[in-house]
Image (cartoon, rainbow, N blue to C red; front, top):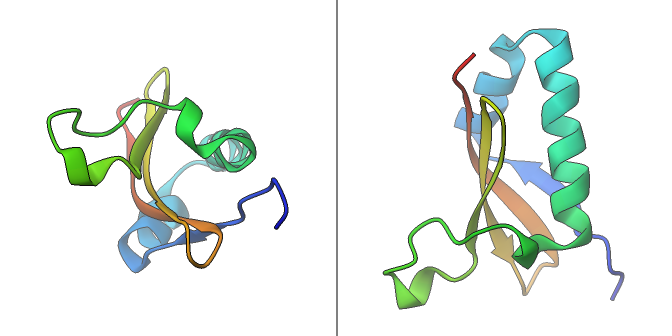
Length: 85
């Protein structure tokens, strides 16, 4: 298997991305590119959940992308995108 984990967006994440400014959309793509190279390098979403080790949040500034590492299919599933800017 490749070291690159392609990202797929859940419907609500796709809708959120479509509403963002083009420069923020580019930021989302950059964050997902980094996350796809090393999915577990970002912090776990809820550290108190032992079963949620594959749910991660990638945050840079006002942008947070929450994704799930789908190990069997070898891709990231973006659950939500939050822009607080």
